[in-house]
Image 1 (tube, helix red, strand yellow):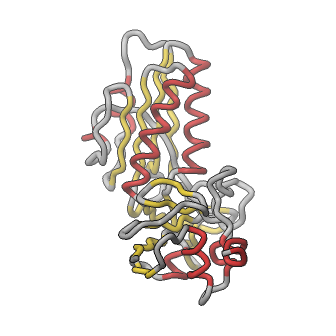
Image 2: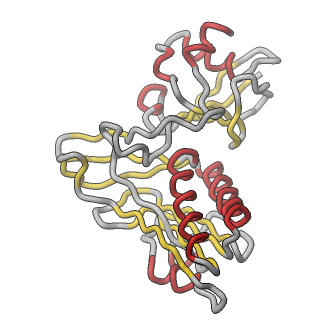
Length: 264
């Protein structure tokens, strides 16, 4: 059977920028695929990655089928502040009007608005659109591109995403936040493409009757996005460029290619 393999972020530099077709025997799993990739490459290249099958996170034991699309996902952008070489990041705001953020990639229920856009994000317009008369609090996270990282001057950022999967993840997290924290509305818009200094990369807006719930939901959303939503960033400095290192994936998402290469 033939499987389509899509590498993202820094894995494109090692495995190639475009999708590759790989032949596997019937009954092969994600672990078998990773073992095949490691035959001609050091297994360490795939250490700590997550894997998706048809835009959903998958385990090493996941059974593959003819025509499946397998994403190879390095840790996503916006990792720990302690991680060396991290690029600058941006996040957050709520809005119902996709025109303020550029073309929306998904159309959702009124209380949950999420989008990916390549147009500048109009934070003021999105925040204004999120307000309602029964809200007692509106918490906004506006992530902007800063001009330096650890003393190295940043010229610009480039964001890319596994777009089909990122839209699903943003939608799911927004809905979970509404349920978990009891907030009225969540709006999240994430920018893709090239961003200049001071531009917004991600805007999150949480509207709620009470401030505590809004603060908690907003913090949970940005922290979770930065660990699980498949968006990556490359930071260009005066003296070179680097893909941002991310935090390790949460337990259960990472697939250890180095181990599967020895056990398959």
